[in-house]
Amino acid sequence: MKLHLANLGETKLFTGYADDHVMVNRVRYDTPIVVLAEAVHTDWGVENFDTLTEAHFEYFLALKPEVVLLGTGTQQRFAHPRLYRALTNAGIGVEVMDTPAACRTYNILVEEDRKVVAAILL
Image (cartoon, rainbow, N blue to C red; front, side):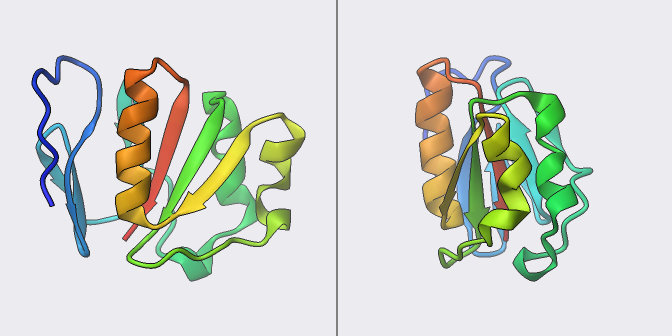
């Protein structure tokens, strides 16, 4: 699905997604990524949902978001709360949803000027 935006500017927004990729500002990504309004990170180091560890969630602490949206691929899958305990202890919300929903929700929250991070698995 393509998402249409009037003016991207410098803000990183999802412009499309499919089962095997997402697009941020019209650039295609075929591997897990982390997206913030100001940057796309490709160094998260996650292969897929089954390889998630506490360290993968601790990655977000330095980014200091209000909320982390975890897109778990084509199906919503819930990570065990112990994996993201460091985030909740720091007052950072964690929302888990399928990847298309995470892309759409991220765009809405960024447009509302919220400090959000989208962690996208394919």
